Length: 259
Image (cartoon, rainbow, N blue to C red; front, side, top):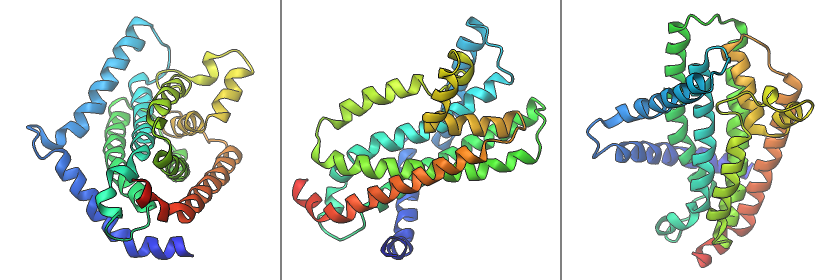
């Protein structure tokens, strides 16, 4: 109840702060907000040329396949990496006024979610351009993203907490995320690229890989994702978020002393 009460109270601040960050990000740029379109689009073209042409992949609608992977991974990777230094980076705020520390994570999520929606808009345009047949399963995108946001929120809270106490966490996390990146299937299908049953298991025990697999099934191939696995990861994400909130509520008074 405390979480929802504070969320309602500080939601306006999170939205306003996210808008300020978005404006500041492109304030001195010649192309301004166009970079939010050009960056993922150009990355998609590079990946499509390298893996689609040089390695001759046979994945259907490969450019869209790649762009969905970039969209999902960038949200997770950038949120998690910025969460490590989130308390220290905002010490001028938390040392002066009280604010629930998880609002910092929500604020960053809003910034990244806005960019994700731009990517999703590009994907929709590409679905029309490539005449990809879509059906009712496209509606699964919303519950999949909902679970994904909760999972990322829970992971970021836990990492934000330990980032206050472990100064080397940024370096260690960078190595771990590089490893996870290549096991997530940004530019290939995890389940088809490893011998059975390892590909099948890897695609399900890696939450980012599994939710990426689900959203590709719904968007690209008009297939129904596994509702059982989606429910399992939803429950796990709620548990991770609860653990993260508990850690923050129990230790937020110590954060000011540490930073």
